[in-house]
Length: 355
Image 1 (cartoon, rainbow, N blue to C red):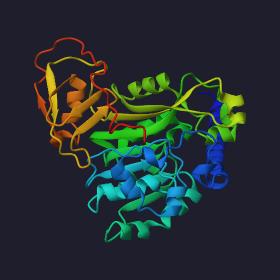
Image 2: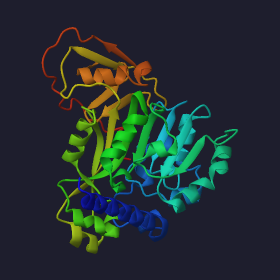
Image 3: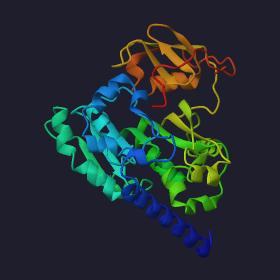
């Protein structure tokens, strides 16, 4: 890259981050100030999370700007990294879910948001009966976790809620996520995606950027990016359309369609296609709050006690992650039967909602 272009890119990135900090630190005062339908309603959240949410400090709840509720199960005792934690809503939900033996690390680029999160650490430790807070917050660049002292292979789960679209260097951000994840660790996150590549000049519009539209990746480019970083099989867990409810925003960017998509990916050596090895997986019904069924993605819904044929990748996701104790995997990879038809076999509509 020539120096003039490199300085232009760096300047653009700095301008983007400055615009984001201003929008979330000064322009928005509550989720009611958002100008699209990306932010989820509380009613869309699973019941067991709503119960925890009711115990959070009102200021933390009010200053939430996410587009989903990417909080997977089986988190007790885990170290979880919340990228773009903002005022701490998901971080404090996670604080309860990981328990006193676990640890939550929240990272955000907006000082005003983190100030809200920081001043309620003791409140939430007391609310959850913890002897001390199990949450640590960092102000910094989401694409430079090394600068914050987050070590290689130190995190069990990375979550993010409608924030990675705001990061200028997305390749570096996802590379950092994979660096800090342990082998078998999970990335589970929601974000805004577009149905086409967007004009770069839209990034100069602070409202379009702050509303998570201008920085939205074309969904196919996102799939390619993960593949280049070694993630051969990322799964869609849920998706829902985003309405542009503001006339001015519709005028500027209404030529594209936007969705909130929740993804699940594992740090595992998987194949780039679903291959058939004659394997089956049975959910044991042992995940807290999921006694009857568990949705791995939008086309794998496991009913407790009922074997389900799975591809080799799905078997490896379940057997090679923290979900292993909750499943029985029958079969191995000694015999191959060709491609696996991964078309939906039953609707996964219970636990995999976008919120």
